[in-house]
Length: 247
Image 1: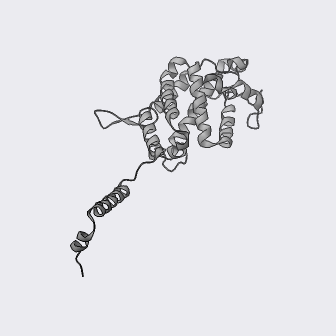
Image 2 (image 1 turned 30 degrees about the horizontal axis):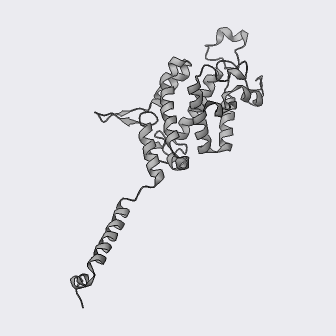
Image 3 (image 1 turned 90 degrees about the vertical axis):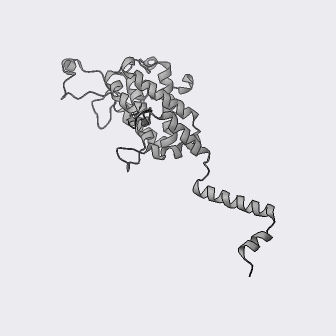
């Protein structure tokens, strides 16, 4: 019976080299699979939004920098002004630009990526991306509406700049791509129900009282005192904008 060395010596050198190379490639692929296009896209997106949408390590310490989108959001909501929202809008702009560089076919993989699992509740099916996109679209829509219904269609964007309206449009488009039309309509309706109505004159002096319920504009089963139907509220809100005008 021929030994292993004798068998190997009988194999032509070019064929032997080729076999070794094939075996080596198989081992490498098993140990470190080739990244497909979306792996690269997700990796690039993750790097782009570090410090903005997800935590980022400090350069000289092991401490993590909290994401700006989360840290500046409440200050923007409370302040409801260009100054109070400057940092939040800046962070959203970085996220929006990262989405613009991402191939849309990679969105499903991106949402499930480990870096975007809800850190506060890993079992939560809603990823950080879905949650923060909904929050951003909602906040921008509410800021544009203001403290009472806009007087007309020309005032739908409130004090928001053209750049901020563009950010709203881009993030809204991404959100629809991720959650689908039906879930988006449910989400949009929930925001419409939050749009405030003007404070009645008799409550003007109690606006800051904690026990006073803020009146909302949309009339539905949960708010029979509302003064506007869903169609009218939708028309006066940023949700009715033609976003192609802001491209």
